[in-house]
Image (cartoon, rainbow, N blue to C red; front, side):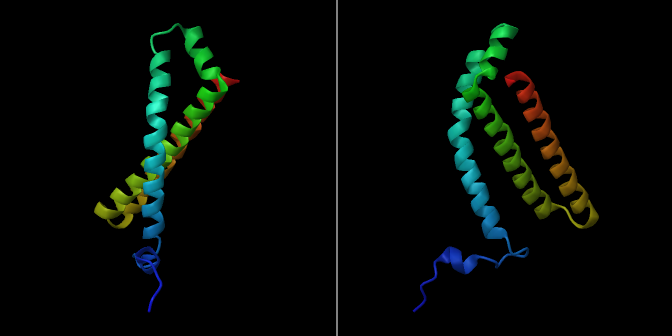
Length: 123
């Protein structure tokens, strides 16, 4: 009698050996983003239309700065992971490598730019 779950039997069976980990990362980051994006949109929506000082004061608040940082970081990591999966499915050879490298550089560049801008506002 085997006491292995279906997930345990599937681990390491993909071409790269990390398919299950990637699947669960995408599921968990998707659920996390589904919970924090609506809160962020409500808070962001209240700031839209205000004066420059009001908007800066809103994003300088620690809770709003933390929420914005989480959305930027995890949103772009989720994007990069999903884009990499799509690229691996449809591109081949050196084009695949170039696109994966470009997507990784783009996502980390956007994360750094967003967090830097947020730090300039919040500090």
